[in-house]
Image 1 (cartoon, rainbow, N blue to C red):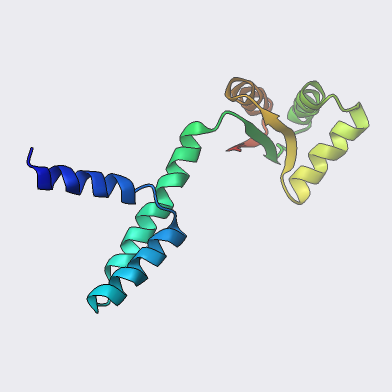
Image 2 (tube, rainbow, N blue to C red; image 1 turned 180 degrees about the vertical axis):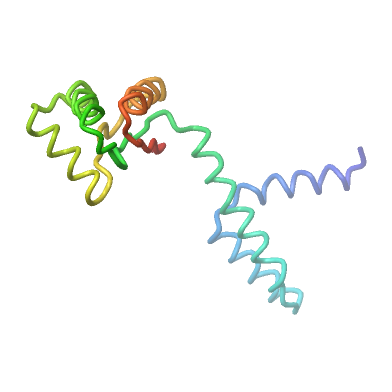
Amino acid sequence: MSTQQKNIEELVDSLSHLSVLDMAKLKTALEDKWGVKAAAAAPMMIATQAAAPAAETTVESTEFEVSLISADPDPKKKISQIKAIRETTGLGLKESQKFMEDASATTPGIIKASCSKQEADEICAKFKEAGGEIKVKGL
């Protein structure tokens, strides 16, 4: 590998650690120094830089939020869903029923604010079996 190629790789490695704000400052400094406009290249660089941390956080998620999106209105399944809510949240019978009705009617109800991936999967399986629709979101 030539010295020039090695220098280019080191420069690319250094630039890939810059924040979006630092990348914008670098773009402006280079435009001023060279007397050019890098309008077409900069958004692509910024988009790539912004997308990289998002991908990393999804991979690194160790905690998850589990929400009830909707419940099955079938009376037999309703009882199973209320039981699942009680087991998961520790709420009483009336509170579990109200929780399920509120989550179904308006916005998703958070069943578990923070749990492991394994626990989120168990909760998800329990509610799917009972007829509820669950959303699992990484924190």
